[in-house]
Length: 65
Image 1 (spheres, helix red, strand yellow):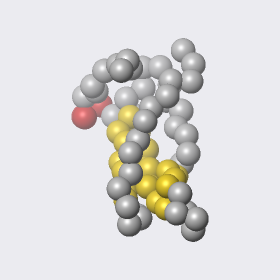
Image 2 (tube, helix red, strand yellow; image 1 turned 180 degrees about the vertical axis):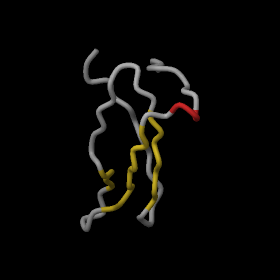
Image 3 (cartoon, helix red, strand yellow; image 1 turned 45 degrees about the horizontal axis):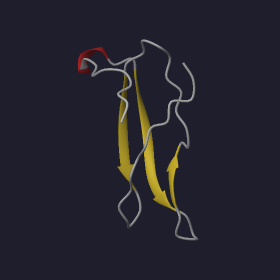
Image 4 (spheres, one colour; image 1 turned 180 degrees about the horizontal axis):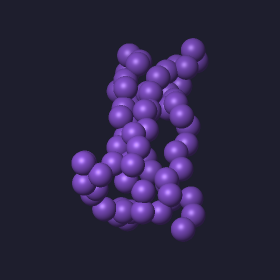
């Protein structure tokens, strides 16, 4: 596993991104929003809300440098 970024300082968060975890009608799992863009050097807080019945997993994929 590759580490991307570093822990931020909670008092210096630039913005909070709300992410909902849900199930679709067909039973598949989904996140809303489906993608997040963060600028280099930006400190963000991810606030997850579980709105479904089943457990979810989250994986990060680095799209570009």
